[in-house]
Length: 129
Image 1 (spheres, rainbow, N blue to C red):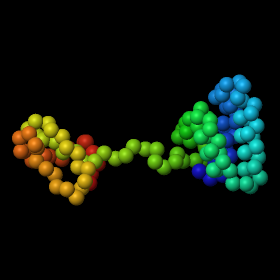
Image 2 (cartoon, rainbow, N blue to C red):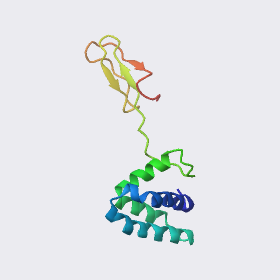
Image 3 (cartoon, helix red, strand yellow):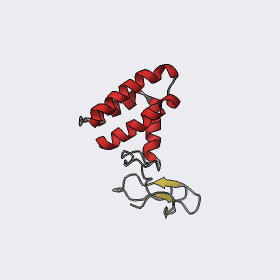
Image 4 (tube, rainbow, N blue to C red):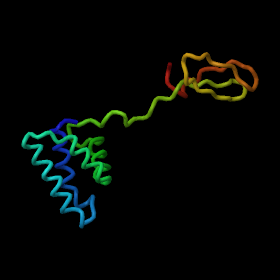
Protein backbone atom coordinates (compact mmCIF):
# COMPACT_ATOMS: atom_id res chain seq x y z
CA UNK A 1 0.00 0.00 0.00
CA UNK A 2 2.82 2.41 0.82
CA UNK A 3 3.10 4.85 3.68
CA UNK A 4 1.44 7.80 1.88
CA UNK A 5 -1.64 5.70 1.12
CA UNK A 6 -1.54 4.23 4.64
CA UNK A 7 -1.59 7.73 6.17
CA UNK A 8 -4.41 8.77 3.85
CA UNK A 9 -6.45 5.72 4.84
CA UNK A 10 -5.69 6.27 8.53
CA UNK A 11 -6.89 9.89 8.20
CA UNK A 12 -10.16 8.70 6.69
CA UNK A 13 -10.67 6.18 9.49
CA UNK A 14 -9.84 8.78 12.14
CA UNK A 15 -12.60 11.03 10.82
CA UNK A 16 -15.10 8.15 10.94
CA UNK A 17 -14.18 6.74 14.37
CA UNK A 18 -17.32 8.08 16.12
CA UNK A 19 -19.53 6.15 13.70
CA UNK A 20 -17.44 2.96 13.79
CA UNK A 21 -16.73 2.46 17.50
CA UNK A 22 -18.54 2.50 20.80
CA UNK A 23 -18.31 5.94 22.46
CA UNK A 24 -16.06 4.63 25.26
CA UNK A 25 -13.51 3.37 22.68
CA UNK A 26 -13.27 6.48 20.52
CA UNK A 27 -10.89 8.62 22.59
CA UNK A 28 -8.20 5.99 23.19
CA UNK A 29 -8.40 4.70 19.60
CA UNK A 30 -8.25 8.23 18.18
CA UNK A 31 -5.17 8.95 20.29
CA UNK A 32 -3.43 5.80 19.07
CA UNK A 33 -4.34 6.42 15.43
CA UNK A 34 -3.38 10.11 15.60
CA UNK A 35 0.05 9.21 16.98
CA UNK A 36 0.55 6.72 14.16
CA UNK A 37 -0.45 9.33 11.56
CA UNK A 38 1.93 11.91 13.05
CA UNK A 39 4.84 9.47 12.99
CA UNK A 40 4.03 8.62 9.38
CA UNK A 41 3.92 12.27 8.38
CA UNK A 42 7.28 12.69 10.10
CA UNK A 43 8.79 10.14 7.73
CA UNK A 44 8.69 7.07 9.96
CA UNK A 45 7.53 3.87 8.21
CA UNK A 46 4.10 3.03 9.67
CA UNK A 47 2.48 0.59 7.26
CA UNK A 48 3.23 -2.54 9.33
CA UNK A 49 2.12 -0.86 12.54
CA UNK A 50 -1.09 0.29 10.86
CA UNK A 51 -1.83 -3.27 9.73
CA UNK A 52 -1.34 -4.43 13.33
CA UNK A 53 -3.68 -1.66 14.49
CA UNK A 54 -6.33 -2.90 12.04
CA UNK A 55 -5.92 -6.49 13.28
CA UNK A 56 -6.78 -5.27 16.80
CA UNK A 57 -9.86 -3.36 15.60
CA UNK A 58 -12.10 -5.57 13.41
CA UNK A 59 -14.71 -2.86 12.71
CA UNK A 60 -11.98 -0.50 11.49
CA UNK A 61 -10.41 -3.28 9.43
CA UNK A 62 -13.75 -3.89 7.70
CA UNK A 63 -14.22 -0.19 6.98
CA UNK A 64 -10.64 0.08 5.69
CA UNK A 65 -11.32 -2.82 3.31
CA UNK A 66 -14.44 -1.01 2.07
CA UNK A 67 -12.51 2.21 1.52
CA UNK A 68 -9.65 0.48 -0.25
CA UNK A 69 -12.04 -1.42 -2.51
CA UNK A 70 -14.33 1.51 -3.27
CA UNK A 71 -14.16 4.42 -5.64
CA UNK A 72 -13.11 6.52 -2.67
CA UNK A 73 -10.34 8.44 -4.36
CA UNK A 74 -7.70 6.73 -2.27
CA UNK A 75 -4.61 5.92 -4.30
CA UNK A 76 -4.46 2.33 -3.06
CA UNK A 77 -5.21 -1.09 -4.43
CA UNK A 78 -6.72 -3.99 -2.47
CA UNK A 79 -4.11 -6.46 -1.23
CA UNK A 80 -3.52 -9.47 -3.46
CA UNK A 81 -5.20 -12.71 -2.61
CA UNK A 82 -8.63 -11.43 -1.80
CA UNK A 83 -10.17 -12.81 -4.98
CA UNK A 84 -11.52 -16.26 -5.60
CA UNK A 85 -9.40 -19.18 -6.70
CA UNK A 86 -10.03 -20.21 -10.32
CA UNK A 87 -12.20 -23.25 -10.82
CA UNK A 88 -10.51 -26.29 -12.32
CA UNK A 89 -11.72 -27.49 -15.72
CA UNK A 90 -15.05 -29.29 -15.46
CA UNK A 91 -16.02 -32.32 -17.53
CA UNK A 92 -19.52 -33.79 -17.78
CA UNK A 93 -21.06 -36.97 -19.12
CA UNK A 94 -23.39 -36.13 -22.02
CA UNK A 95 -25.52 -39.18 -21.14
CA UNK A 96 -26.26 -38.84 -17.44
CA UNK A 97 -24.84 -35.47 -16.28
CA UNK A 98 -22.03 -36.95 -14.15
CA UNK A 99 -19.47 -34.21 -13.50
CA UNK A 100 -15.75 -34.48 -12.84
CA UNK A 101 -13.24 -31.70 -12.09
CA UNK A 102 -9.75 -31.96 -13.56
CA UNK A 103 -7.73 -31.17 -10.44
CA UNK A 104 -4.48 -32.77 -11.62
CA UNK A 105 -3.72 -31.84 -15.23
CA UNK A 106 -1.07 -34.57 -15.38
CA UNK A 107 -3.82 -37.19 -15.21
CA UNK A 108 -5.96 -38.02 -18.26
CA UNK A 109 -9.69 -37.32 -18.27
CA UNK A 110 -11.48 -40.55 -17.34
CA UNK A 111 -14.66 -41.97 -18.81
CA UNK A 112 -17.98 -41.76 -16.98
CA UNK A 113 -18.01 -44.35 -14.17
CA UNK A 114 -21.78 -44.85 -14.66
CA UNK A 115 -22.01 -45.67 -18.37
CA UNK A 116 -18.44 -45.56 -19.76
CA UNK A 117 -19.13 -42.59 -22.06
CA UNK A 118 -16.28 -40.14 -22.66
CA UNK A 119 -16.53 -37.00 -20.53
CA UNK A 120 -16.90 -33.71 -22.43
CA UNK A 121 -15.34 -30.42 -21.40
CA UNK A 122 -17.91 -27.97 -20.02
CA UNK A 123 -16.53 -24.56 -21.04
CA UNK A 124 -18.81 -22.67 -18.65
CA UNK A 125 -17.77 -24.61 -15.55
CA UNK A 126 -14.11 -23.84 -14.89
CA UNK A 127 -11.07 -22.17 -16.33
CA UNK A 128 -9.14 -23.34 -19.31
CA UNK A 129 -6.16 -25.58 -18.57
